[in-house]
Image (tube, rainbow, N blue to C red; front, side, top):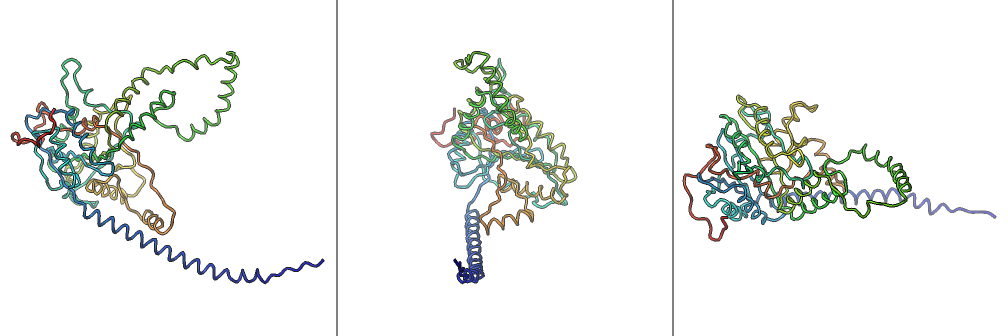
Length: 435
């Protein structure tokens, strides 16, 4: 039996391959062009929308006889949650050559809401629209006149753990409140001519996100799991390797005990520190919360610039809000200007510029451009492959914590360089609560 193979169809198919590849390449080329045009139009629309959006910098002057403490400011933050989960507000404290000022930087469309919220807490305060106090600081480094140190802060433990808040600053017997911000204001008031320190809280309402994280963390603690720092990859692999042996030992112990699980019907007994943690977490997640980015800037004329003085001064003042067993603040290693770094000096100057631009734009991230990042952005735009930056750890603070960190000083605080009104202003809008 003779088998005859007709190669004609195969030859025809092979001869068509160049044409198929050519037209596929043409289609792919036009697809890339269309994607680039699409991205260009989207970016242009975003830039146009951003350009149209207007912002206002509001300066808040406290009355000399202000009696309202942090408790009243909780209501202010609860009021500010009305901006919705897609909008940001920036609450700022600036020490400029020893004079201390409080600001709120907000979209113009929310100006009425912000003013009403402030008057809710401080009926005698005065609010003025002012020029942005950051505008005269340069955005390019090295600079002949000024130098800068900057850092962002993050929570040292998961967000559901609270920091030290104003109720813990009350005297146990007299119930007199020692202002939590007194150390911070003292440092701001001691700045010399040519020195400035800025502190920024960019806040965005988060709905029930903190409540969900807190409930999940409480379950982990009750089960005896790690409640704070996560395991590293070595510990994870070691756990997998030892798991069969642990189960074998458990089985052997059960057999020796007659197969009875005596602890099955008993309630989980939690250590005292776990009970305290759970109680504190429950208290924190019961209140309205915001996603909060905290930025610090120390900028000064080169003749008086002293990084250690600026850095140590502000970080030491912030230690008042830290606790060893719950939560506190620490420098975010991904957003800090370091002296000792394997990167070239050019990178450090790029960090300085990025920190100032980020603060001025009230942005949540330092954007340091590089050839590699530009290439990835371009590659992302013409392909479906996306290179996403690592997720930034969220800092969730509730209204009690924010009121502790940002409030106008009362009349018993000796801070003579805080901007204050000379006398009481007129009556606030009718119907606003004052108690």
